[in-house]
Image 1 (tube, rainbow, N blue to C red):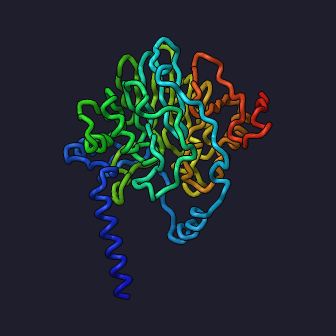
Image 2: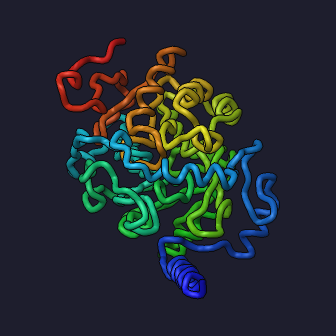
Image 3: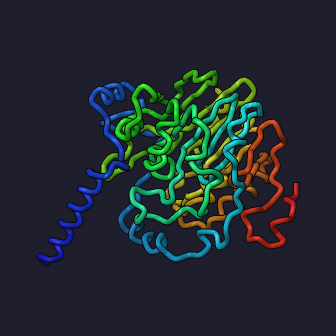
Length: 377
């Protein structure tokens, strides 16, 4: 018994030291910041909260039952073939005389080029979405469309929240000196300052806050989710979705979110959007309040008044128990059912907003003759 207790104590000490000494866990809020947050309707007792009741509790018995399923060796949870990737050249990314376009890196990471500006959204370029490479499964793709080193100078980085599959310490270390400014929900600046980003570059917003940035309108809008990078910092920073408005284009990025009335509110205030990136992946009925199901994704796209939407938060990491293709298969069915236009580009493909966005290849299928089949319209 004594030896077991000793092992537990030693493991606890190791865990505490790891959290306290590892920079990837980020920073903590100052007393001044906490005092400012206390004035908000959605901050109480030192924590941010969702706009509507959001169930995140799981009883002990249910959690124990889920463990074997989560670690089950299910081959359907990741591709059994190399995903097709369009590689980008650094020279083609520095040209500025082109309409608005995006490059998807898988999951929720994008390079957005709009009105001569280079914007990175949730730049997670790492292999494993966790504080340690030993604590998670690797990215599906061995390569990215382009490496961080070959990216052009970045005008803005826009963050939705601080979870590891969106905010990556290693990526920020490589990007911080080639990025002019950073935009993020309240409280997240503590992480970036801890990582050496000058505070003058950091802009924090609350829900429904707007800011003019290099001729663009940025608005942080609500999401139904949570935050946290360590053992006891859940809800310590805000989370959200983003509206990015230019002269010609109106773009929406959902971040991570459960379904809720905020989508219609966003659509009424800022819609219609000519392009929307909507979360669709890493869900489960047990936590659908914080990660919407594919059918809800299609409905949310309609709620925000999206001309066309793209499912994101899939095709890079396994963070739930569903098959890796389940998100796209289900959302396509629902989008067709409700007549909501949807676009599914390949990783690395130029998404050019001045063109008619149509999915022409089922690249998520195994590379057989089926991949050449045109999707019926």
